[in-house]
Length: 81
Image (cartoon, rainbow, N blue to C red; front, side):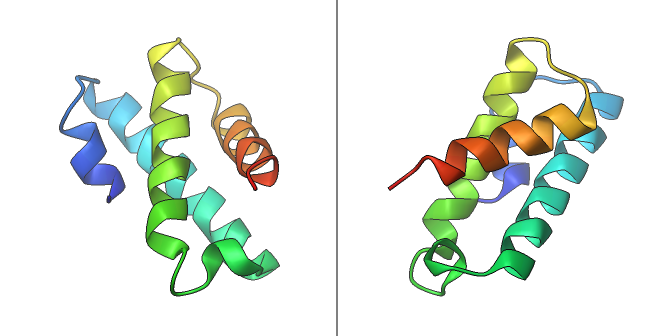
């Protein structure tokens, strides 16, 4: 699932949508640079979906800080099996 697909399911203003997209893009880039099985071809789609959902869920709870959105998503995935 792409971040844009997920964002179409919820309603955020333009600035928040840009923030969430930036958080997703930066978090994914960090993961790709770090490497590992979660960014491999077979797991990348589900990893990207989890990453996007976590960022959106945090935003729905009111989080609007870019670094906290990124760090929270990365911490969440670090705890995933």
